[in-house]
Amino acid sequence: MHFTTLSLIFSAVPLALAQYGDSGSSTTTSAAAAASQTSSSGPLHVVKVSNANGDLTFTPNDIQAAVGDQVEFHFYGPKHSVAQSSFAKPCAPVNSSAFFSGPITTSGTTANTEIFTLNVTSTAAIWFYCSVASHCASGMSGVINAPSDGSKTLAMYQSSAKTATSTIPSTVQGLIQGTLSSSTTSSATSSGASPSATKSAGVEARGGVKWTVVAITGVVAAAFGSLIV
Picture 1 (cartoon, rainbow, N blue to C red):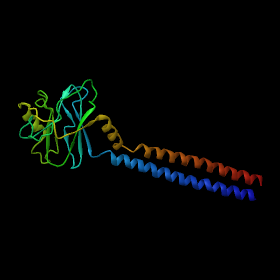
Picture 2 (picture 1 turned 45 degrees about the vertical axis):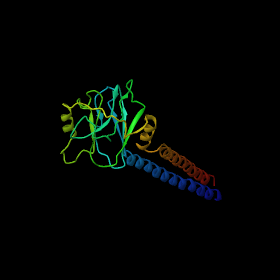
Picture 3 (picture 1 turned 135 degrees about the horizontal axis):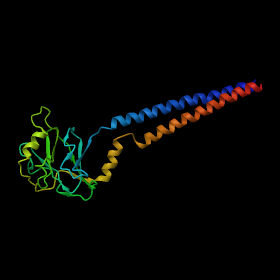
């Protein structure tokens, strides 16, 4: 009789722990999912300057960014630049303070390790173009925060640029120079749940399974004890 009572007590312990383990797993998994959803959109906007095919494009070329956001330019070959322009005068620097990366030469089909970042300090429209050869006239341009009323669009800018002569800014300025490796790491971290959060979810889930198995073992032991008595 005593053996049966003790068996039932011990079997109840792992059952309670199994319930606790499952609850912990659910909470951690939910936290990881929430982290993935909330961090998928963030203050970093990556813009490809051309691509592996050598197209004369910025991708994306029409960006909405808030004050405090960063726009990061990744360069592909063979040679391109990014320079600040104005809607009124496409393919020319907006003024003497226009940001300019300088011409960036890239070999192969992968992105250059050198990147340039613009800190967004205003919601006013920022027009930009590639000053290399006739790239701007060929449609290689973009805009950050184009007017929402449609009075000035990228399509309008590009249409005017077809007959414009590209001007190279005289000074490399206004952008933060960096390396692709550090940016890629930052982007990967911000695009989903952190490795530690994902790992914790897995550990908690395995814990729940472990306690469930122990609980079943306890129940079997209790049943066996009652038979012996």
